[in-house]
Length: 248
Image 1 (cartoon, one colour):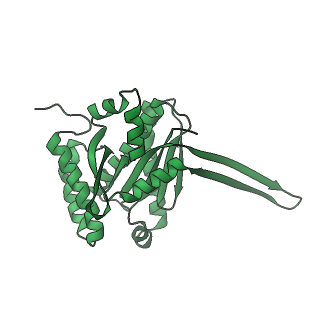
Image 2 (spheres, one colour):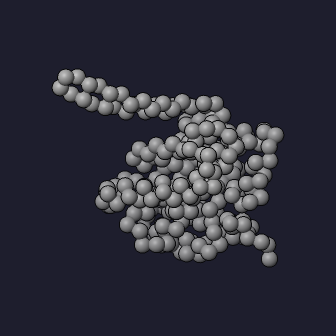
Image 3 (tube, rainbow, N blue to C red):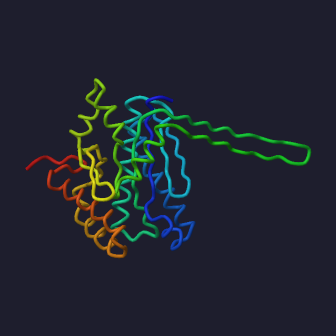
């Protein structure tokens, strides 16, 4: 698979979540996260996606590689973030803050069930292999970020900017992507495209809920929430809400 899109998403503070919540509730919240992204699939009926979840990591990529598949992957990430923001203002059994990255590059995925049957034993093993440069790129970019959000890696940004295509311009014009200085560790930033799921109806409730949540944590965790609030305020200042709102 070359020049193939893939999203890597991490659940922030997962050790604290595991220590303080029932594992069945966590599993249900994961299932709800996947279910909400199926709404994106309805808009792209020919798109099939593979989800791989291991502990606090979610990996999502399409089975096929077209521009529509990339659009659907962006929409899936948008819905995941939308679910995070909605969950923050509701009484949820488990809150799963997410940080992630979308990369495009080379990787290999194989799924091979193996059956081993003897006279006395019948066993089945599933062998999953997922390796490649795109995955490393996504993981490295995801770990650099200092917020609750999902963005395109620098390599992905450059890849689309080099194409003879108006895809990124279209996503920006629709407020699906926002050109933004992504907050990184140690106070640094780097310009890329952030996925935008900020609806005008939820902006103040989310800011209030994030402000309350961050007070429970030390400064290392607080800065992630603060940077996210700064992004939300930027969306408000520039009127970049999704769905797109007309300028007054």
